[in-house]
Image (cartoon, rainbow, N blue to C red; front, side, top):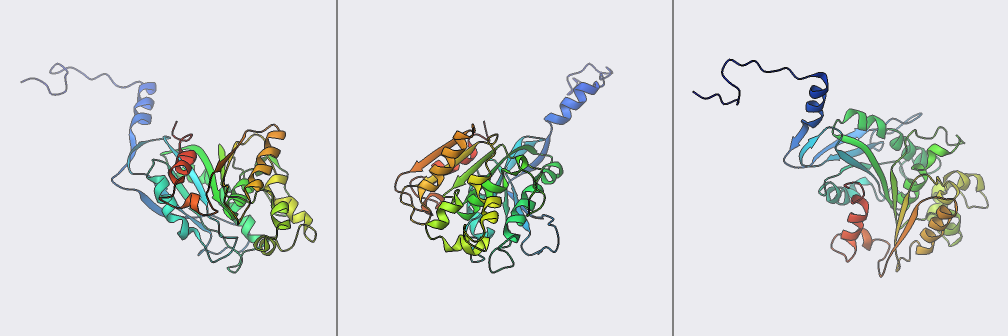
Length: 297
């Protein structure tokens, strides 16, 4: 009877060398699932946290995945830094992203009206990003290639907190030891002083003052005042946005380029503040592709 193994009967199989064994392990799948897997992952904060808000939902994509093969999108929801909107309102966006083959960590944080505001909202998000290396270490299929994406207030938080490794410690405490490969800011108030001067009272409530009465706070968390030229940033903004003017993103990208950084401004004609993250609208798939294409190259 012929051998099914393809070896002559009685022949001894040559053991794998160390190098071959390591290669075989790296090529073997570490996960196989028929649909996306979602798990709630808490992140630690300094001082007293809130277990009901200091967490992120980790979405892992369906299919077969080898070790170190899946990139991660860290998603930060908007909502004017106010408790009325939370991470659950961005779950559809996370589901659409994970359906494109990336992992997603959709984070929650304390907001104005739910224990947030200054400085908690900002330190929570910094802590959530600081926890990303641990999540990558504990999830074998994650490659470590990471992008931080935020919408509206979340874009401010993403662009600020994602750019902190190059800056010294200040009144908000230690910055996260985490550096994303890229930041994507959607409809973001990336020049907070300019946005506040255009009557953004939500921002005044979140920071606890105006640029005149709380100048040092704006210096600490305003993205345009905390640029890291080594991190590429794509700012996406609708030309019909009446909540946050597209010129706000333009000002940030111009400042990033002047600092020697890599920045790009994508203006989406006719889009409002929320339409570019609304499924079925003209540019929704373009936004999805902007977020995922460079990660999946």
